[in-house]
Amino acid sequence: MALPQILWADDEIDLLRPHILFLETKGYEVTSVTNGADAVEQVREGNYDVVLLDEQMPGMGGLEALSEIKDISPELPVVLVTKSEEENLMEEALGGQINDYLTKPVNPSQILLTCKRILERTRLQSEKASQNYLHSFREISMALMNPLSHEAWIDLYLKLVHYDLSLDGDEGVRQVLEDQYREANREFGRFIEDNYKGWIDRTQEPPGEDRPMLSHEVIDSHVIPEIGDTPVLFFVIDCMRYDQWVEFERLMYPLFSIEKNYHYSILPTATPYSRNAIFSGLLPRDLEREYPTLWSEGEEDEHSRNRNEEAFLKDLLSRKRVNARIRYEKIVTTQRGRDFAQNVSDFTQAELNAIVVNFVDILAHSRSDSAVLKEIAPDERAYRALTRTWFEHSWLYQAFQTLAEKNCTIIITSDHGAVRSLHPTKVIGDRETSTALRYKYGRNLRCDDKHAIFVKSPLEYGLPSRGINTNYIIAKEDYYFVYPTNYNHYVNMYRDTMQHGGVTMEEVILPIIKLVPRDV
View 1 (cartoon, rainbow, N blue to C red):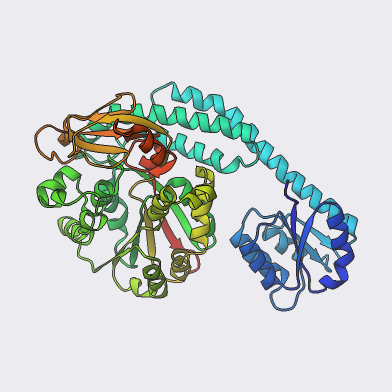
View 2: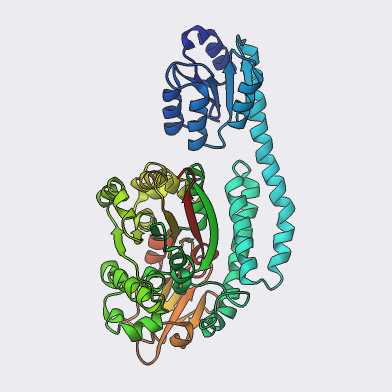
């Protein structure tokens, strides 16, 4: 078991060496620094269980360092060590969310007992989270036995994500949660199968109790109403799941006021369908009518099938009679992202700025192709942590920090999520069948009907017809399609890869985030 990690910041740290040695003999590993700036940098780069923070240090003082530490890691326990017992100082410190404070001079036993109490509290919090989930387990199970509305499914998914994020140490309880996730996704697949066609039938009506907001309605409902006095920046982060957004959100709270809504991705939950729907405001069947050559281009080529997003957006605004200056940017490479972060202020000149960010999607596909990344992120919890690490050190977070100082409105959403594909299911199709793993279209497709939604009439599902006898199959739960030929080889190749296109809560239920800078 790893030793508990203590970070101790004090400008007189050399005088505290006996205290540090005492803590090390008691089973703690202590990292020492002599100023607040170094403490902040250590928290940014390391992984600590407790921070001991001197209140008076040259340069960056303890309270200033405390504020920055909490911005980086809001849950990290901090103990303030001070020479002062003034009440107003303690009120200011407590307002900064310290976990305890000690008055100098301190003795080693004081420090030891304080650290033990805080670490024990952390353990108790973890146990409390496990208890809370186990108490909710029956409630969630009972809910899954009854029909749920699209809004109730969002609430249930958010609840499962909350427990997924809070259950750290208890692997037994985590296994129960993972089993319940699978059960929920099984029922969610049935819910979508029973209701999706009816939602498409009613797209002439506004979203409400009868149906959720779908991909093609996001801009009309959440972006266009914001166009006006301040510039709007609309980010579509490809393949971002809600649980990944929650990790990003923790870094954004100090910078922005945050408002959350949700939409359902259209089917299939794949970029050529859902992202084109977002930018065009049209279902794929209507895109086929308006842009007949679009669906004749190669589906697997991201740059051909999604190269018309700017034109789609302009056409959408024209149909809605919105007269606004538009700037569109698609960011696929790291260098282009760095350039964007350096020049992000320029994006406050246009009234509407649309920015597509492809990194999260690239990360999902890279994990599928890289044994090293799969080892670093062996499960969805680790994959989520890897995504957070990228974001925390990314050009995108840097851009948001700059925008937090501008008078602007930011809207963030995703076109679809992704899911670990763990169970193969055999599919029969001809050589013209599409190649995606979580959905396929072609003639006379066949597979186990328990594992997929069969779309016999594409137009009724808002999909391109692609000619006579074309049908779609869309995978449920965590299934992925494999042909019988060389079956075992491809089963092993694609098992445990991050895929999208199917029907799970992770792929379908997506956040729509509104950010407004706090200090502008």
